[in-house]
Length: 330
Length: 162
Image (cartoon, rainbow over all chains, first blue to last red; front, side, top):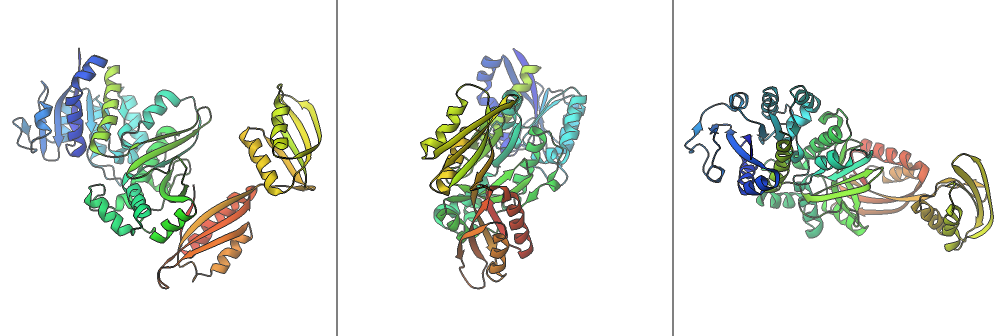
């Protein structure tokens, strides 16, 4: 049985879900792929838990951070550089203006010859080409399925199955929070502010919701899809962005009367994020906090993928799939 | 209405029947069929037929498109024919106060505003207005950019069809 060692960087909701998923799928992965995943380090802002023999994930994921017997105050960047490991899972929250702290984490991992799996959009939005080329130069892999569409396997599907196709267009409902708000406005006729408040109460929207409702999160995903699937070299400033925070209940009603729903659409080919009228029977008319991505390809024709766009457990599915893809090649 | 249609067909057995079926099935009265086979893999076929009205012609053109039969040219009573597209837009802003007649006139210069539906919760609040516009297919890009320009100048939020 081959052992693959992992450092998890960022131990919030997603990092903990990754630890739980690895622990719960341990024997399935071993049986299916002949690989044992061993987490040797977990790092957070305040310190790290390190154990080269493998951390007991069942315990660490549930306990308050900092009370673990192997907790040390070492800085994340030092652990990434010095601890021996095959894969770094980068799951910190990101800042799309400078990509930090994830950008430094990913660079340090790639420079020290470690493969990287990330759910953090910000470093890829800021430095996609630079990071891909750094990975190539160091002979390691950088995988980022979890950055777009949560559990939807869009990037890996393209890489493994659709490469000979020319993609004519990519349209998507790429943000679950805004889709939840617009669905609520449509189904219950409530104002934007009331729908947002409910999304916040349910934990679907952040206390500061601007990143979602002003379309920035969707735009970040548009940038990643454009660079990854269309081979472009674009950044956030290239995307024309209009959010949903000025949508009125009257506009939602009008749309419904004429056979449409209003959805926040990321148009990857045209680098645009805007609320659009989606015909009721269109594949992108999906309810609640779901995400959907629709590709128009020259050989396969139209393809639509629908799934959970967020949520720690769902996101950990994409992270685990990237980990296994790397593990199989080691 | 007399229609003169030029199609570009693949030079394979059965293509001509496949191209004629959408016309005859929808009640078109075929007057003549001419084809010239001088250009490699494709054969240009000229079909002259009569239809009852524009909606019958649009149905025929739509069916040809669905069957992936390329229409090179279409003329009705000797004039080039463009299929009409119907589009909806929603504007959010002070749409009435900012000269709605001017907005409609500027769109009408490229197409035809066929419906205007206004929702105004309060005279001082922003209104939400849906406009349905019929436009020739070839003028679609110009219409889109004109609508964007109007919304940008008059500070409306624009919600257009996907």
